[in-house]
Image (cartoon, rainbow over the protein chains, first blue to last red):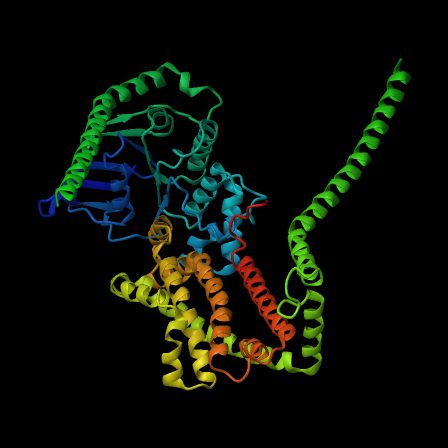
Length: 291
Length: 286
């Protein structure tokens, strides 16, 4: 298999304005991603899992071309990613459907951007609506659809313009457990039908093991790739309860072990940040009272 | 045994059919009652109000000369309508108010879209716009009259002024408050800034722009009537002022009621237009 996406020594910093009470504003660079190296093969289902705030979404933005790495590069088919393009499709956690468009018109949106003719657009959109199992709901507006249905529309929209890579940013995190499981197996079915390369970001370990052929585990901030784990299941879409397979349980535990410390560290970071911010606030209050 | 079963089955279906027709009847009855209840809820207070208006002067609770019963007012209104005065004044007023309103829409919405899109412009202009918005239009009516005279121009200008700011500010905030995720999603599909603006920013800000349109619609009437009372030779505001001066109290009330009815109609039309343009929005049923 050929390499589809290659992430090479990518670093990303953010400049965060920090107002330290009565002191003057200082701009501190915060490292979000540090030396990320990852190769994703053609047609592979790659899952990236990490604690919250580890820069998973930053990495996805870089892959989408919505922002640029400060160092290193990301190549798609050997060419450096220059900006957003229809060769990559994104599915967001919050669906990002256009509320003034029907399900069908939402799916057509990307095709419109691609310059596909009206008739062809409609036919193609209908096809993808069918693929995600929403036939009969074409003319509903997003507010008339449930969360799971909205996410199906969003997936259809991203697939419709036929991107080479599908980037998914915790797409099922906002759904209830049952809908999530249904959509997970649906996604596997769609992946097998369309043979797309998928990069799927999640903080759910079970989701990661269930979906990914390989799972990249990230560290807490600054995000690095801690380890990439192979998940050697042949057919995921079989009827068996994969989740209770001993191999599955073993891999899940392995990832859990890798993540345990990271999650703890991430939580401590979060705590100290909040505490710090709180201190600043009370300081500022004190100053105000004195002044 | 089999026979018995069949007949029981038939009986059961017949029973079920009966059930369903009676349920339909109940549904229909229920629907009618809900409808009636709705009409009752909407009109009872108005009817009571009109009845009080009729009764109070007749019973001598208020002075009939200054507060004539509603039926007398209605008669006066009919008289005004027959004489053609009412139509003339209404047409004059509507021309002014719709003229100023339309001009304001033509200027404010494109300008607001541009300012909202261009962040720096919005940040610089916002304080000034807030000052203008909070300057009551009527307070600068004298300025308009000084500069533009007593003719139509000053009337249209004051309506225009009163409509521009709600429209402009709402359009700007509509553009600035488009869900960033929608913009991100559209950008990820490689949309150029111009198509992003046309296909995402504008449709997403329509609901907020409409808030401005309705505010402007309301103030276009309000300001106009006041302006006509101060310096005009025609229009509904002038009619009210004139009838009061010449002690035609019933005609004065007729004029007042006409204005509130026109206000209601304009608001209703704008609400209908809004519903049509934003039919995709969630409708909360009562």
